[in-house]
Image (cartoon, rainbow, N blue to C red; front, side):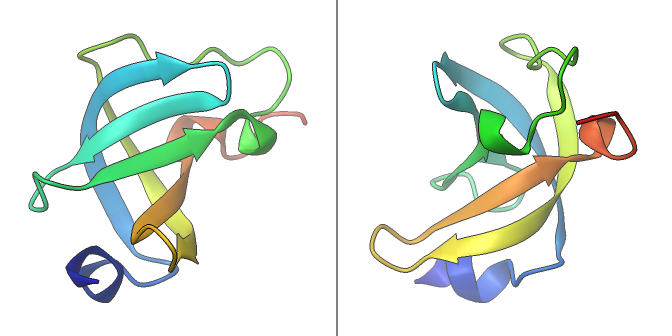
Length: 83
């Protein structure tokens, strides 16, 4: 629950890409090292790449998943790109 409390919808986060999966990239959030934030490809515009492993990325929390205490993000580099 601490992740959801600390990162409300609309919050900006920064973190390191620690996993790439078919559904998107997993980020370890700065300031909440035990939490993982998925950036799902359903929010990724066409023609845009997922961040490389180890890359730093920033984004905005758009949804909370209360079942597993995750936040989901839309990366800043996806803002304004054609969907």
